[in-house]
Amino acid sequence: MFRTIRSVRPPVLASALLVASIALGAAFQVAAADVKSGLKIAFVPKQINNPYEVIADDGGMAAIKEMNGQGKVVGPSDAGASSQVSYINTLITQRQDAIVIAANDANAVVPYLKKAMAQGIKVVAFDSDTAPDGRQVFVNQADAESIGRGQVQLLSKLTGGEGEFAILSATPNATNQNTWIKWMQEELKKPEYAKLKLVKIAYGNDDDQKSFVETQGLLQAYPNLKAIVAPTSVGIAAAARYISTSPAKGKVTVTGLGTPNQMRSFVKNGTVKAFQLWDPGQLGYLAAYAAANLASGKITGKEGDSFDAGKLGKRTVGKNGEVILGPPTTFDASNIDKFNF
Ligand code: RAM
Image (tube, rainbow, N blue to C red):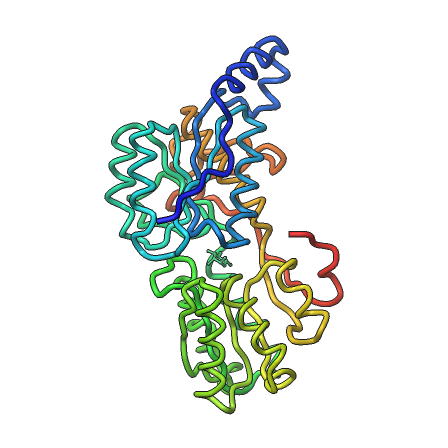
């Protein structure tokens, strides 16, 4: 299994910064969100080679740098249910102060994360949650219900509210996509969507090539398909790439969740009219602040706990240990050039 460490702050530098922070006095400490210096915080993304996850992890590493901690990113190259387990075990052995994980499966990682917590390591899930007993805090990109319902509302606008459509998801286990799809199905029950027909949920496993092939399969199996909704940045980019050079261009709408940088050319060439996302960098940044505050004993993850999240200001833990980043943005030709992530 492939393993990468993209950013490690050497202990010597951390202690130099600690000395510097002591020398600079109280003002410097406050700027570093008043958390402990030198905290070892490891990010475990769903997969290390997914551009979305890279932006999120980079946001996390930037936050850890601001807090004078030692950050690193380790993880699998595939988003399989148990592909993160060996990385968690290694991080426990290394006695990290906190693990920040985008879980590939709600349950497969839980026994190992519980072992980490039993040894005093703080655990934050972000992007894709574990079962509640697998972590202390879940940093959610946006309210899951609004994301799911919002995807159907956008689809309805783009298709005139009628026709067959398919969902191209990530892996069948992904907690985040499954929750959003559940809310999409709820929204579809409303009478105004009676003419929208969900014909299939396909899984591209957040693998570019598999998502590309699944798109081809959907077009072949459903000749009347009007739209593909891919609530995954890997899936939407692969679907758009396939359709942009196929006779389906102009007939089949592609929408979902994607990064503006991956989708820009497909918006410019007319394959994609609109799609949504939040800023993954801010998501990682917020998760790192939550982790550092847990590891500094400033919060425990209970409802009502609040903490300083650097440039994102004060944030509060809600129900079920959830901290929400904020509402997603809808991107289209009119605003896509304002975003660079
Ligand atoms: C993919 C991943 C990630 C999800 C985004 C929208 O990159 O599945 O978990 O949040 O898409």
